[in-house]
Amino acid sequence: MNRKKRWILGSAGVVLALLLILGLWWLHGGPRLWTQRQFAAHRVAFEATAEAALAGEPWKDVPGVRNLNVWPKEGAEDVQLADFTTGAWGLGSSTLYWGIYCTTDGGPAGFQGTDMVLTEDAVGEYSWQEEDGDNHYKTWCLEDGWYGYLMEF
Image (cartoon, rainbow, N blue to C red; front, side):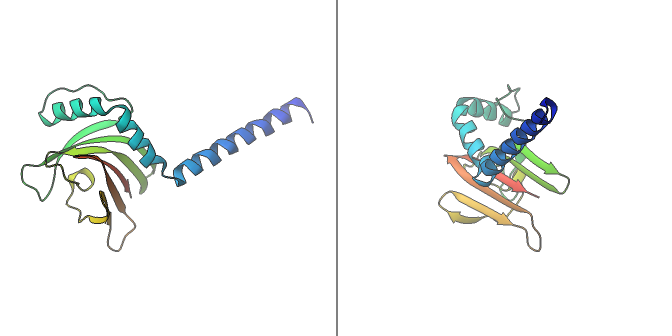
């Protein structure tokens, strides 16, 4: 076997191994684990940034955060949430978003503050499933008033 074929086979083996590792990570709660570790590592930055954003003040970037939005919490008067998107995967109508949010009332919220009827699956873990559809949402308590989320369209 010549050098070029060995290099191609070796490269293909490395790519397959990486895909296998990423697949296993994904199946074992990858986005959720990533969210929990990111919050634990940068909790102070999340708190300071959320406080500034909710007050309408300029804020600094938090490591690993793609964007930050402030949404009203539908169905709750004068309640807002600071939503930190930390990851996304997919194309078009098959997309998964994950991130971290806090609410001014300390309770869980639907994706981007929408009025989803959340079902408590376990202590501090909530979910929503679209009727007659495949969209679903999960949110879980990270600490008092702070939640991680996973929304799949």
